[in-house]
Length: 121
Image: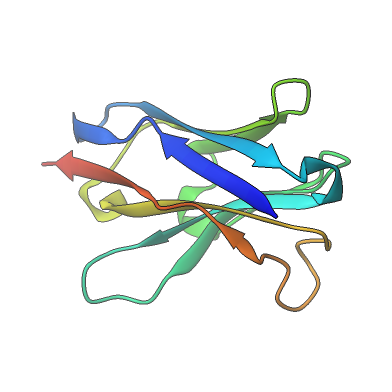
């Protein structure tokens, strides 16, 4: 089992920045890919960014150039640096991890509880 705990959410004005963190513990040796999802009220959950154990990354088009995903394997921590935030980025952000590549079907089966990001206009 892997436990994931997110932190770093909060209220920020449009154009501002936040850095989310996700601390992993437990059977971390089994982790291959990690990612950040978000879910806004009334909308489906969507993959924001993902990173493989080798450092390959994926970003959804709406955050490219603004968000950066990274992982510190020594600290067992995943990050999401979010710059130039927009009101439409407002959502609950969830950390996810799994033992598959993020390009494979259903890659994530460990989830955190989420951290709320609110961007005011």
